Amino acid sequence: MKALFIGGTGTISSAITQQLINQGCELYLLNRGSRNDELPAGVKTLIADIQDEDKVAKLIQDLEFDVVADFIAFVPEQLERDYRLFNGKTKQFIFISSASAYQTPLSDYRITEGTPLSNPLWEYSRNKIACEEYLMKQYREQGFPITIVRPSHTYDERSIPLGVHGSKGTWQVAKRMLENKPVIIHGDGTSLWTMTHNRDFAKGFIGLMGNIHAIGESVHITSDESVTWNQIYEIIASNLGVKLQAVHVSSEFLAACSTEDYRGGLLGDKANTVVFDNSKIKRLVPEFTATIRLDQGIKETVDHILTHPEYQTEDPEFDAWCDKVIQALEAAADAIKG
Image (cartoon, rainbow, N blue to C red; front, side, top):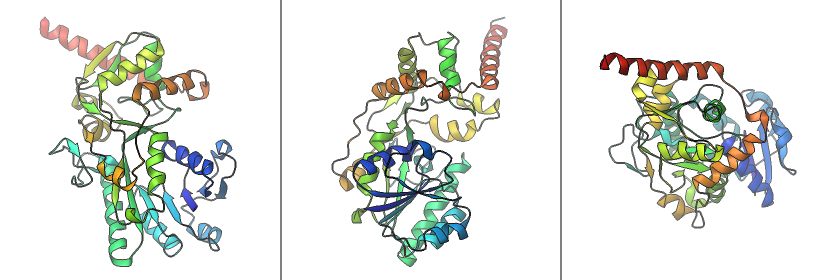
């Protein structure tokens, strides 16, 4: 198989890149080259900014592919560019959308690919929906061979997956735990969530590549495991070797008192219980099963980050904000009690 990834070094795509190389795929990555020093041997790189359409067109003018996948498209205009570049040059175009595009709030807690797409709370999700609509139009009217993939919360060894964090990543929450400080969990922590390790995601994704039954289809790829946010934070604390000190704060309050996009990221996504029906990906890729249990995956991630200081990015502004939120709640409780 000959494939081109636009991106290819992010959380979702890096495991796919590694597994494809292990399988002998002729893989090209088109990116700006800022993270290519970590690529496995055998990857072919095309160094360019995908926004520079003329340069990219020259780089690929003599190339054709079995699969082209765009991991970094977020608005329809970017896919209009991709269509101009790759129509007639690939047998399959895969767009990475998002499971946050599904109906929010849900009318049925079980999410299938037939669940309506609607998210009035998060512009990111609405843009992904618009991207999907554009691609389906090109498929129906022009025969452009598209496949839409919807990841949910996918993680790797470089960042601890959790709910409430600042703009600089998730390490500061782990640091608060290590310092025996309280950490914020949105809501009461009992809503269900699904996290998927990127190596598991890669197995499903690769099974869709070159799969004639996936053309014109939308499919999500997630673990079958459902856990509460309380369990997620307990797992993280346990692997850090500390006792969790949780403070539960309503998602609405967090959205109201933060400059982070908690309206989208929480109210439009993580505050809601999600349970995915993965029947479709298993029908399209019969060998797909997510096998990395969350406690096992988080242990691997925590161990990796603790031994790699470059992933321990501190966020003092978020740390101070957490203290202010917790103090405000305590003060409110004291005022009510008199």
